[in-house]
Image 1 (cartoon, rainbow, N blue to C red):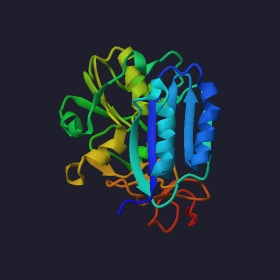
Image 2 (image 1 turned 135 degrees about the vertical axis):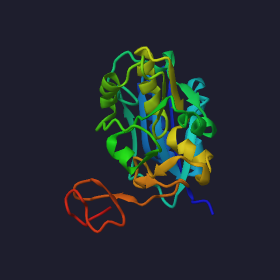
Image 3 (image 1 turned 135 degrees about the horizontal axis):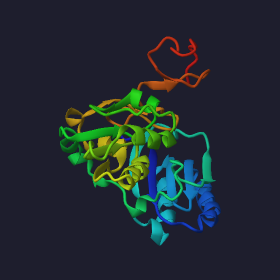
Image 4 (image 1 turned 30 degrees about the vertical axis):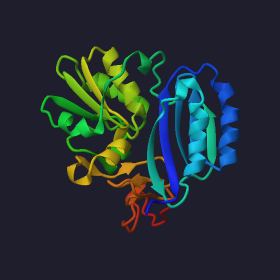
Length: 268
């Protein structure tokens, strides 16, 4: 039986010079629909994860898609027993995902999209370097078999890692993935600007891969961290076995007796 709460994750890089004016009407619609979550607006586009009953979430998507610039929003869906957000936030930002490289525009050129159904075929080829574009703690919870973990503590550190460790003369084909796809848009654009020729990204990210690829065929190992109260999702996009230590905010397993970082047994 499908759980009653729909969690919808979506983004789009698109020029929104009026993004400040978009905030209040969007906030009003979300409040009226009793939807919670986070929506980021910037001149470069929109990035959001919202949750509520399906009619409520669909009303927000309809509001957004009424704008001709947002008609083709790609939405990743998952479900939960309750809304995994404490409140609603609609925020104005300089970037909808912060790589902190002014002038880098994924719309001018980003990695080739690879559909989830074709991803396994690509990343199992010997000449493909597979790179996890997420933060270190996310990669340690779960990642694709054979993926490199850059060990970044924040997304903006990834550019430095790629500059130091990757070479377009040596790494002819690079494939990259992240949770929902948005980080790869900028990270693959960065590589192309550095002279890399064949750069690929997983369309819709890990969430869409888990939705589209059967568990028995999956090359995903572990769980996928998500930035809401569910903390992690398993292969079936259900709440996983990871939680957060309430004292030091470190990621821990629900089966752990105590946090390995601070020793506390006070878990969320």
